[in-house]
Length: 152
Image (cartoon, rainbow, N blue to C red):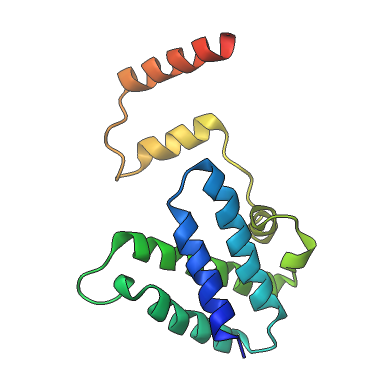
């Protein structure tokens, strides 16, 4: 059975670091990796692991549940669920998180994904319904700014 305190600490670490900028991305990856390794080493069934994570998330991120939800806590719960989903797929492919240096490398192997190119990423942002502020003029200005910066 998963140790509740360790599980809650790992889940809390993921949520606490999720909204931070570039430096915290590495810390978040480490927290995800810690949770992935904990889930991998646990001898419970996949269903028991999922139930334990769900129950711990309800304790750690109580604000993510109910009628009035805290957006940051909802995002943190989604990050924790992503680790569980990745572990589920990894188990079906017999891939261990222990054989990877980072959570990102582990997840990339599990889902066979390649990082998007800069243009693909911009296209994804432009196609995103949530992102309405991107215009050709803004994009052109940004590219010019970045090109000048790179030329220095």
